[in-house]
Length: 161
Image (cartoon, rainbow, N blue to C red; front, side, top):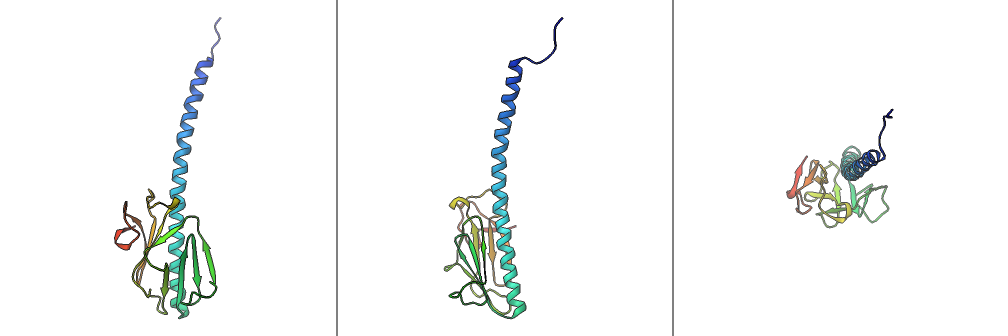
């Protein structure tokens, strides 16, 4: 009488296939997690800048935000030589086309200088396969976008999303 079951070779082959699929899946998951983290940071920058703009408008006081590495420093006025009222820590470094990397809002909530682009650069590289990686601040509006491949961190090379 013959017993039914799996041979050792069949079990090893199945385990090798499962292991290969798990390795591929974990690599893809890491990539997707990184994209999600970059997009979350872009949303955080966008919401912080929008909130500061609204505070300037509603309180009728100018406000400033400076970028420093992976920090957003928020000031209660347009004077940035004093201590900031809050600091937002972010996970990835940012670059900006503005020099210095500063966004000033006047008492009407309008930005004082020319359009400013803020780009998130995970790993210090401009290439990011995520859906969004940039924020553009203009005189009266702020929007999120995706920098064109190989493009500079400038409003002209960022597609609105």
